[in-house]
Image 1 (tube, one colour):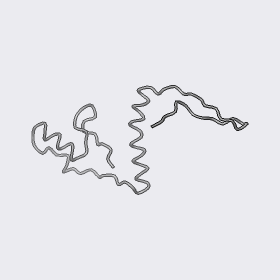
Image 2 (tube, helix red, strand yellow; image 1 turned 90 degrees about the horizontal axis):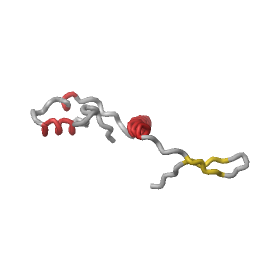
Image 3 (cartoon, one colour; image 1 turned 180 degrees about the horizontal axis):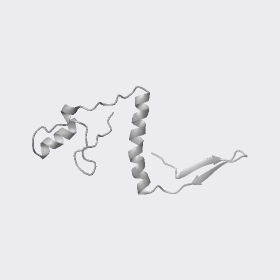
Image 4 (cartoon, one colour; image 1 turned 45 degrees about the vertical axis):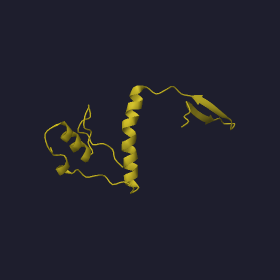
Length: 93
């Protein structure tokens, strides 16, 4: 992929000029990585290309005790299994 570090602007005379921008911060990139999936998902829902998965309570129950069972339970219920966002629903298409 090719990414420009700026944008082209058009003057009143019709000539184009490239205006360089600064690189995004880590915070801005993190916010963008969280915002984009939600906006894309809402757009696809509005267009009828994606249906939101209703919460399935029977999938979130504890299948068995043990680490492997917890990972399997998270997998089938589309939830983050480990880390700071554990239990959060993941974005799926």
